[in-house]
Amino acid sequence: VNHAINRGRINERVFAGLGVAAKSLLPPGLLGYDENLRGLEHDPERARALMRQAGYSGSVRVEYRTWDTDEFNNSGQLPLIIEDLAAIGIDVNVTKHSAVDARKPLTRPGHGLVFCGNWYADFPDSDNFFYIFFHSDAHSVPGFNFHSAEIDAQIVEARRSNDSERRAEIYQQLNEMVVREAPLVTLFHERFFVLQKPEVRGLRTSLAPPPVRYHQTWIEE
Image 1 (cartoon, rainbow, N blue to C red):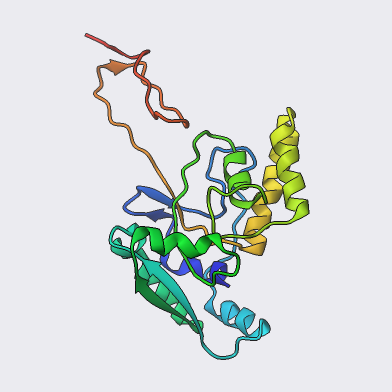
Image 2 (cartoon, rainbow, N blue to C red; image 1 turned 90 degrees about the horizontal axis):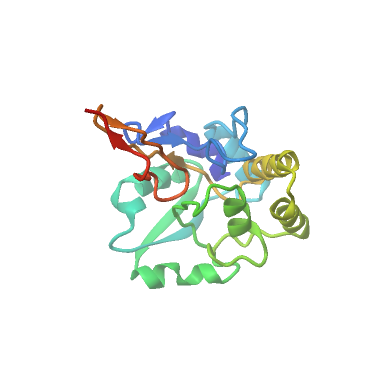
């Protein structure tokens, strides 16, 4: 349902071009990314229909826990999400906590919260998204509790395989699954910018941190 409504506030370029709208979990450039995967468009009527099909004919009340440095609340993103959810009968009760207490319920299945978060892959491989988010043995990002033996098997096969084409096929399937099943709502991918003077030569950027390595740069006089 959330995935059917999240397009209302997001354009192709967000934050003055510092981000791009995420049409799937995988960011552009990673194995399995499909530029033709469009996701679900902003469609409140369809979202309301899905709510009715799920047995929610009236309003539903859920909780969002915020804290002092919650960037999603402080940046103004959360109020926009709340407004879109209210339009289809989902009322979000925002409560304030310490940062630790705000996230504590996410470790328990059935926590009943809506929550926001950022994820930055430590290394530029699609495994760093699917294993971390969805494998039954992964605990780095709590809160989703979206596991299955079939998904686990796909993830393990992809991370063990040396066949790049097979890995790409699996990650494309998993990426499509995330769009179809919507265990999470993807919002945007951040973009990194590197500024350089014209006389700086040999500068190369990297998907893995640090984004710039200076040992092969030089100054042209």
